Image (tube, rainbow, N blue to C red; front, side):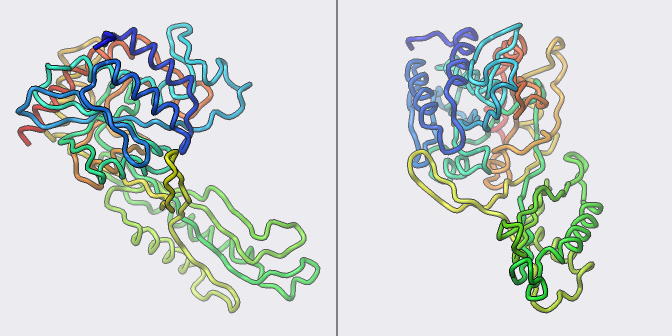
Length: 401
């Protein structure tokens, strides 16, 4: 090991990561910087999968299953630079806060995870994996691929999305659906020749609004939510009557929801309002997808569905984590367990692959994806001090489960 795994060094590394812009599909430079730091810190193995996600391993003494700490390499776009109080890629500490895009979502916590794993060298009974993935912000292609590749095989996962020091035990998923209305286009000067796709838009929106009012709820995660967020008209010309209208729906879903059940419920809701679609028109509901290309050059059409998940509050991994972390200022009191409000890669690790997954990291969710993104340095220092106990406790609980 050529660098001590101290909080001060972790904080400096976080600043370095923030200074490297890394939108989805453009994570190559930050992945290279991460690999460099892992090697300097003495990680026993550092590997990259086909999409460019990075997996580092600190070997344990043997006798316990591996635990994975995970964040993501990509960040959302910064928007207008002039709207930021501090430059979005400055990575500076000002007034007790680390500033910049990724400070708390998620390069600050990533740096803490890397250094916490290094600090556990020769201490943990099992391997400590640090898996930092691509494309989380666009649905989780990186995590799905990393686990399916077999490059990592954790018995439990600790996600570094901000929890403000609590233990996160799940979240709702997210599905982006599209309702496509089709008609017949014509020149706007001759509307009688057309079947204006906009004619059916009010009925579609009425059906969606009715469905949004009768969402199911989970005792821990709360209610699902559904909202139309965009309307796209094709062709996009003010003097052409459109033959296609696409209504975009954002649906925050429960772990039991499936693609088929979501589409079926939208279709039924619209049919209640429009039981007989007029001749010359058609309505289709589908899961949205997009073409994604990794910085390594691999491409795929990806459905825009991030699964939800929920760990039982009395699961051994959850209770062990809460006891190990404690509460800031009250270390003998178990940390609070609660769900995240947003989706994470835990939907893949736990919701799809069945790996026990929790979340722990500093940072307030309200700063995520904003031009005020920041991370409280003292809160981060406290979280860093809790990581070793957390990893050891989760490793022990995973060994018994």
